[in-house]
Length: 113
Image 1 (tube, rainbow, N blue to C red):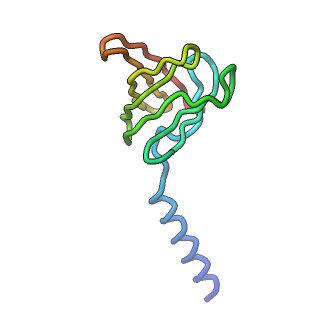
Image 2: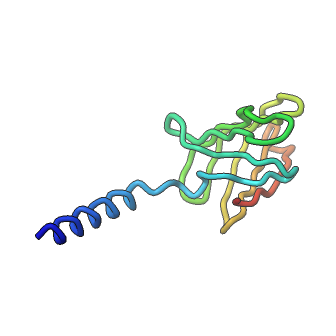
């Protein structure tokens, strides 16, 4: 009886956890320049914060979306300029793109850690 109860409780918890699985963008990423950035859920969107390097602790972006496509703002930590940006995920790669006036764009590819 107790064994059945424990098994049922474990299955219920596993099912509940699967329902709240994180978006593919959430996690630690190695940037093109070698730093580590963390992307985490924050207030209905996803915040990008550098964890290592010269600008460790600095928030450099805010993206919204789901699945494989996100958009928002990305800040270059070297000059503090903010650009409209988007991100797309393919496997363990995250392509980040920042644009000025939607015509002058730069891209980087980050790798999941």
